[in-house]
Image (cartoon, rainbow, N blue to C red; front, top):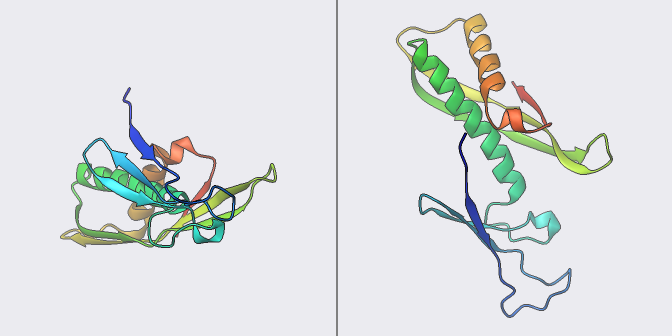
Length: 146
């Protein structure tokens, strides 16, 4: 088993603390020393510059799928030169009537060197990547690889 730690920090500062006025900006500090500015989504009165939790969730799913895909491809001796994804998360009410990221669609574009896998092999690798992705296994969100 492993443990993963992130420190999240927020302070009110000089801002008035009402729903309309409090500052949503905060920081995420990761154990490797990286600090990422965070905020709420602008639809929820956040700053449009920093990363919002919804974007981070979509990024985590995309990143996990990619890393799992690369691992599987390497074990199959397929050489990947580039992997780009345009991941899209949809916020909607879930079956309990609560707002949630209910669907994430991944649009990976992969460039291989040398041997090119056929469509069936590529689909199998994506399916296995989804099945083995730690983040996908942790959520109820529908994940589609387009």
